[in-house]
Image (cartoon, rainbow, N blue to C red; front, top):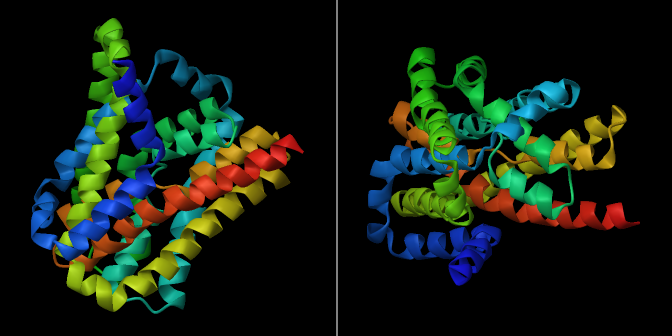
Length: 311
């Protein structure tokens, strides 16, 4: 059992490498992975269910005991990344598909990977977890409304349809996971170390499926999307950190907020694009590339912040 835990820990901490490896394989052998796009919603639901199983009752205490910190993080989460995505789509003159894709990424809540990166960076982990919980629970309203307002000039957005999608693939699985943990805490704790592996496998399959399905199109526009995604992510990390510093928060809180703002639940962006924008197949590409990039940049950012904290 101990060996399995070590393997799970290793895979979770090296998810960016796994995504790159499987993405390369999917690029050259698309038939082996393109089928996964038919199950994107299920894979993301499994990842969110795994997240729910890891949420303890004390994690919710942050929501009630540190409202100021959470409010700052929440506001930055749903303003910095959505508005930056919109600005980049305009500045680079992106096609409707790619503009929609980058805006979807920007309007999503924080991802669970941010909690791990915050831990590595020696940031405020409880705050990071609290921010992820709040932004995720409120995502069924915030994400569709923001996409409707920002992407409406490129494509037609069905607000109700998107809300239902977020409820089904994010909110319900997370709440179910929380319920299961409440009913069977001892059994859940026994396999807690294995749960991150569920999210890792799900995200890897989602990204590999997208790459396999769009192998030819990636050749023509992959470089452009990579540049836009990298700028988007770096702006989120820098502005999140900068605003938190201006507000004179403690350094560990600054680190947590910077990471939470810059790292998105890009799996949700892919799922929403697949479920609600079938006429815009390339809208899934920014989310797929973001999934790889933000794990790499997040790790680098964590290293920088950790070194700064020691000096």
